[in-house]
Image 1 (spheres, rainbow, N blue to C red):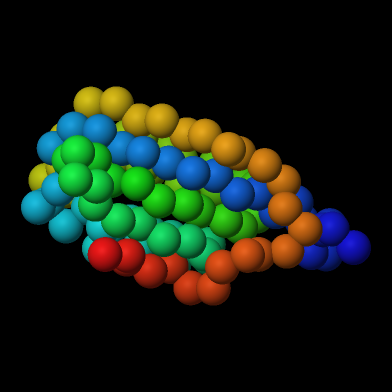
Image 2: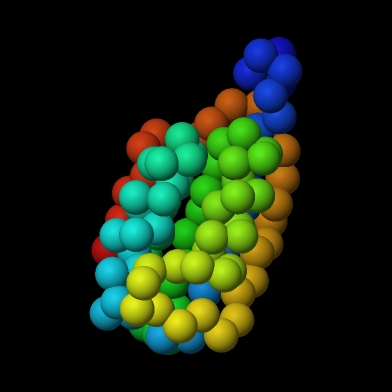
Amino acid sequence: MGEAGGIKLTSVDFEIFGNVQGVCFRMYTEKQGLHLGLVGWVKNTHGGTVVGQAQGPAHKVEEMKVWLSEEGSPSSRITRFCFSNQRNIDTLELSGFKTRF
């Protein structure tokens, strides 16, 4: 119990700063999350940032963190990023990877 076939599961919250709204950032984040086999959500804030949460195998969550901090959508410009509340989880608490409004 606690590990799916010996794979550690992790959850992390993120906030991405910069030119990240109106540049399909949420759509690409959703696509990348699904590509990595993660579950989670992403949404725009009133402050012009993008926030969300990603859950899944620890190594895949780390890949997502790199993508969120260095790549993003093609026309985005990431100036700062913040990852918080990173924790190990026993089971996935979400399903799918969705854009919230």
